[in-house]
Length: 358
Image (cartoon, rainbow, N blue to C red):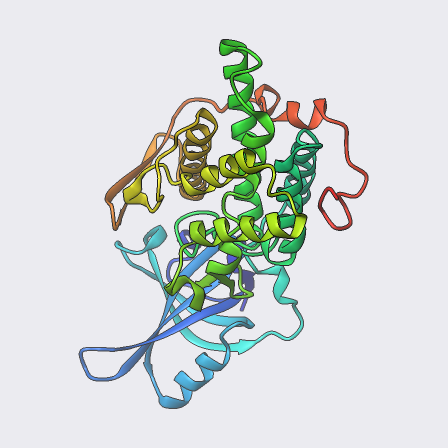
């Protein structure tokens, strides 16, 4: 019987076939069938690939076995059954599962693959902000919480749900802010936007998620106990206050208030959790780029399974969301303005070690 990694399979091609798939078992949920027997809904992952597989008519020993395999790389024997309502038109029925002790889990955990791209761009963006109070605060916070900031996802669900997702999201937002700065500086002049405020605010806008989310070591996150009592916006504001005290920079009161406003207003609307709406052009840009980057990541995830000129519908708390993939050609990477961030700013010397400008 052939063995395959889950992420390498086009399961629609294997209807009616029994396979052994290798993946990490992330979650096991016990359900009861109509006949009174138990069944298991088992979530398995391999990098970006994620599937729900079903184990019917399980015994107590089967349930204990499956629960004992959570968080482990496993070889899972499945029958690929035609199922019109299933993903790819199939459902996966588990026949048996065993731990694979020969493969490290890091090969299977969903993670940002080009993490150095984001680290390098973060350092380049911070270099533009040197000799400002915004730089001092941002660098202190990023260094202080780097071990968490660089691995935790950006959210529990919806967007950037992978190891390093918070770093990816924060830098992507900052790059978007920089490109907006270039556009509006050309239109309204050099004194219209405060670039260090904009970039540093973008890089640390979600620093409070280092406390709101706990990394689950499987590419995802769960809400921490802290999340029951405060939002990541609240925690981000209090962390800035702590750093201001540590750096003894209370005299820079106006700049500190401006940076705190960036964090406080980055959800854009009161109903989205911000205690105040954006009052500065820098804050408006940050809120727009934050929402845009989250949505682009959702589109990217959907596009991985869509052919051109096709769509997908997802139902959530906000109702129906439609994702449509254009039939037209994609733009060349050479056309992207993001590249000028790397090209126009001197490289830092320590990006491959700590990952941060110091």
